[in-house]
Length: 293
Image 1: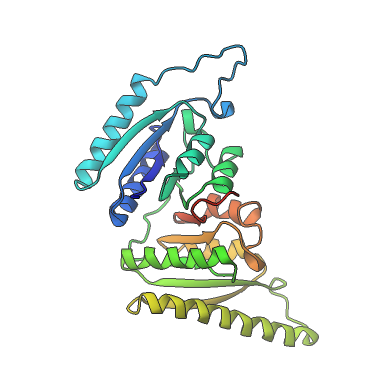
Image 2 (image 1 turned 30 degrees about the vertical axis):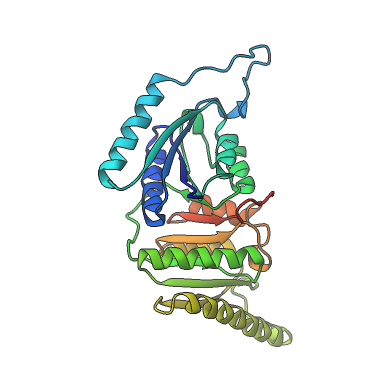
């Protein structure tokens, strides 16, 4: 089945930027592109807000024109792309989670209005990031030009979903023609000197990080022998700070939906929130297709 790339569109600048990223991703994947507008208020989560009003409002002409115009502009830039537009009577989070069941990728902008208001700032963001059934690409408003030749950076922690993230990151890097950076963040106590009694432990961490990265790099090189791969162990007090810093040079950061060690609780805690709100480039959050999380 040729799964589509799905993007939530509401006419805001952020969602239109997300639509461009979605079109580019669909073109690289050879997938159709679906522009989806969820037109119920976010607090409704797919049901009428007034419990005594059992009627569902009809799609609006204004939103229909916005979707048609956006689709037309994207077709001009990507003539080979099959683009479908659709309005859905549902809240933004529930709509995109449901769409993700049949999607190859879901793309969301970090800010919106109307049907996708506050998409990555509250419960809707948690809903999409935590419950999507496919990878989710988070596109933040660009405060500077993204480096077109910047590497794809992926977090490696040895977990099963991180292995999926490495595979997706390798595909992205190869498709974009850019290097791949494998980053493993291991904890340290700030910048304070490590006491002698902990020196042996730190050495063990370094060795383990090296082995983990070497294994991931070997897997990638077996699939893409011509891809430039950098193994980057990072000693940092806070994983989110290290990844945000790395995103400054990147065209994309890829992380697994759940991890262990430096990436534990990735979509439920501070690391994920920091990345989607402060990364300097788009963030691809990898979910196994069809997962039930």
